[in-house]
Image (cartoon, rainbow, N blue to C red; front, side):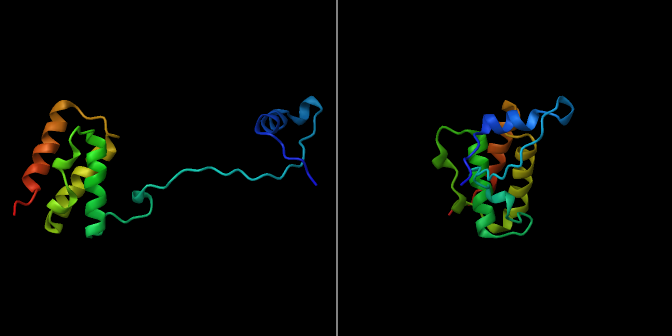
Length: 118
């Protein structure tokens, strides 16, 4: 039975070069990385759907860092406005959430205009 090699020992062994007289050990290992996928990693957001619209609205809320997130609800938006919401989402994603105060106000104003009032 092989003894597991700790990550520091593995990295130390792999950093040795053959020119220093060390041989690389034959090591088999599995690294498990827990990294949840965001929906945008596997969703096709170009295709209008209720699920995609809800996802983008929720992501926009997260990027805008609103204190009262209940003012923006995905169900308040029509699928007819999908392209406009998608454009806002792409812009915010491109800026990685780093928005100026004017941009933040503009996005909130646009979302307010798109919200349906029944």
